[in-house]
Length: 367
Image (cartoon, rainbow, N blue to C red; front, top):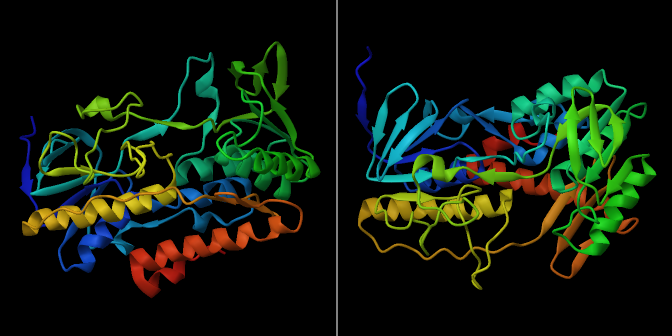
């Protein structure tokens, strides 16, 4: 029987190597302290690029990069349990630190649908590679989920694979239901121009190995699940809100805990008006920076900074040099204006790399 190993780290312990995680780590490293990133794969997935990789409009190298490019201290492992200031991994190792930032714990939404396991998810770089290989040999694809991931994937597949029949379905009455009606309408226009069969207003009843059943109608094709994500923070004993996301205070510290912060999809972030912010890369970036900065301030004994997070809009790349963007009342989705969002999407990806890795990050800039 293996004796559990306890390891104390001198610096900030970051759980998860996603957008929030690498930005938290970078905040610490820039200040001259060590940031230890715990992650199951040891790689940072570029989630905003995964639909393009899976759909074939971007190379597989765009999907991820080694976390060693972001921090010198990377620990490969999965969190099994946590108490304030101490993280235990599946292999029995326990890491302790005076400041911890948790950024992992969101998984694809899994409602009670018969055969859901037959649908391929798109959450990680490994998912994107697996899906890409399947789409390359498919004659038809059925994507469930008309949000950002589903719309971008449908656009990429239709742009790259002209001979593949693409169906996109969602229970809502519009695509991109969280955005404005005009943006959802223009998404339908772009996809329709590419021959995508958009089916709205009906929930999925059953998924088979090569089919999706909706209200008695059978749609044949490779089933893909792109219908959103949920947090599983309560599995680890965190205090959670009704959404299942970690309850954090104004400093992004886990409520009731003293040494542990949370950021990204797993945490319930709010804007200045108290509204819960969506799960998105831009919120994860903002929250990760604040959580990392406050973890460092905690180590130094300084006063913590209040988080001031805001949702600044959406930028989606549908492949084929078309996209959608929405910033408050401003939309870039109408004909000709839809040429601009792919450029903005590329610029945002480059900004992320430079902020977390300096100019050396340009080596991983999207193609």
